[in-house]
Length: 503
Image (cartoon, rainbow, N blue to C red; front, side, top):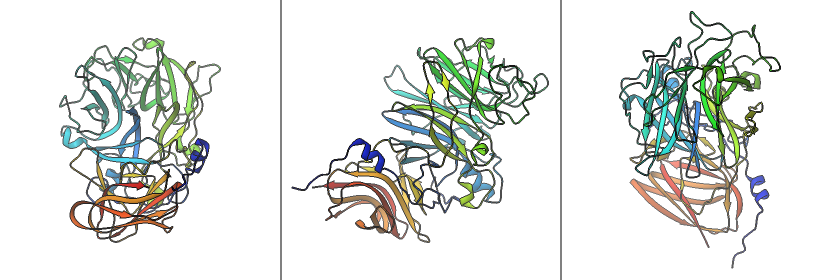
């Protein structure tokens, strides 16, 4: 009988780091312009979340034990203007879907083609997602997004990865919505559902206009949503947010609404809040209220996240999302840490995550940090259950194509360049005896231990124009925690999933 090593939880977590790097090509089936060199591959860093696609303006939610993250598809802009172009966001018409259950290996679920769903739209940015169990017993997902700076659209689904539909066929909030007041750009939505199941939506931007001041632009808004979560059910109320710019988000803890937003680039010449530091330039600040439709109830608390440039990652706009997952608070944000590796300086952004210290009882957020190291892996990958090939910690020369199943992708190798997928912190709780993969194409999939040129654990060949599942026997005494490197060889090999079996 083969021995099985026993690992303590501490040892498991301590062993879960290391990587390999460079990048990919595609996201939606077409050959997009993607990074070809990644800072994650050999560094062991967890940031950015994805090294094969530029993503910004994060939102997230937990569902069935997984954390789903959505963001703006900056790669679509890059594909349109090229590496010498600028990220003006005008060509972005889709949103990105990712998920994880370990915070280091991320499953890419593809794109939400907002333009196809809502042809009336201009551009698609900055999503905010909530979910609720409805009368049919199903969990329904409501994804609000910026229709350029013109307003807020909404998509719905009964799955976190779609298919998505446009229930209104128009904007939920537009520049012509009654009661907006002096809010020129009713965009960047932030949604939350309170303990009573009531939905709330914050939004706004565009600057001070004719009636505001630098200190109080007067362009932040909040409204109660209707029971259907796709209509408005109250007057639109101003949140008096000092130096407000954009990136509106809402959280709700124990009867308190927490509103977070991005401050602007103006000098802080006016600051009447004694005992509270002035917010730094283009940072993230937060306010609280117990009665959100009372404009005077909102109290400025503090800033909690500096501009990415203050962390040495290039000055840019700012957008965060706060998420509690498995007992810890995580702060998702974007910066431009990836674009240097692509050879562009056009302002293309990438999602990152770090932990944030939160005093939930007293509703206090400590100052956050932004690091390339990011967060630790919170659980190992189980190789003895089916794993999707689009679940990666780092990639090299890989792009992804959608299948007929919403949210399911094929990992596709390149004929011209080396193609590798890295999966970190894989725990073999026994000696693997067989490797099985499902793929289409003509080539070989090799599984290497701990390095892309490390020991070959398994090698499986494919020669088919349709998906086939191929098994390979393994004779090894390797168990415990390992990083796996899936090396694609041959003609455009497309891999769907993989699994190991043990003695």
